[in-house]
Image (cartoon, rainbow, N blue to C red; front, side):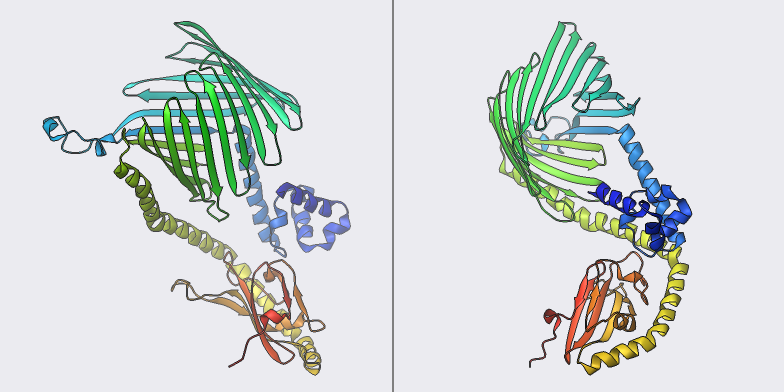
Length: 511
């Protein structure tokens, strides 16, 4: 959607020279950077009526962001760190007759397994990409590692192929071939063939997945795996804006199971999600529930409780930071203990809310204040200049406003009694916050035509006689006006359209 807006913006600016020269901002961009500047994505969301210095700063920021995205897309680094923790001694303690066991006075929590993996891509040509990946694993003092190299080629718009070679200290060489093909616009198939060489001989493996879009939000999968852990699996996944639903059935050796899971997506700024799943098979039954939430621009924190037979109770904590994943499975007990389930559920919530209130929110607030202070310092001179320009514009408007008021009064029309623009504080605001508003009564009255005032969906800071008194902070426009001899009042967020007069703005003076 953003690229479409950017394309429309560039087309409107480059189709004709008249389009560039008629708009002050695009003319300034063209004068400074030429056609290259107009082709930069992101100008469509930049506030209008900026100075050449601000445009230059914004261009450099957009250019840095584009270079970062390009590097991320070219290398596509991915990493996972998993640390398994054995905390069963918290709930499965030895009885008193075993008190002579060394260290039995305190619960022993230890790391019993670790896994680290990393991959990176290197585009060779427009169709060829090299992929290098490696992993290290250890469990109970024994471990090993492997390294893999793959070469992927896009054969057409409908498919690609990938050759893979791997080697490790625990297993012998691995050769693999992956194929992807779009059969129809709604159906595709993937095939993965592998040959694993080991001391026991050659172990072949084949995995084929057939998928089809059942509707706009639903995809059906059919998977056949032969060789290493042979199995047949079918699943249906439905993903919408507010939910994610999965149902799956697998018949295989050694595991056969049925799975159903649901995830609800809350439409809030933190992108909160809660999920639950039930998995039952020959190995036992597992119930899992949890939640995840965005804690910063690039970080998502999640936790889940797994309760099953014979697995016991486990707590799984996961942190996604950009393309890196940190996973901490904590095994609490081998038995179904209510106390373990309670602490696994309540404990992470208490820790999260404590950290969020004492660490995360203060940190994010400090970062925002630091950015705002830096922005104020860099724009202090420009704000002073804009303030002087706005005051000069208001002085020039006085005569026109006088005539407009006379005309409106003669027909009991629209009179702007008072108008303020900027940052307002309320009872919920912090004591340290200060009001930062400017009087815009005259500029607004000057915009009244035929007893109407219409403001479009754009920042009001660019209107004649206005300026931004609090750069980078949320602003509102508060207007007290009189229409047909009756007082009205409205407060509109900056950037939203405003149309007055309206009956809903009327101040009720009954009583």
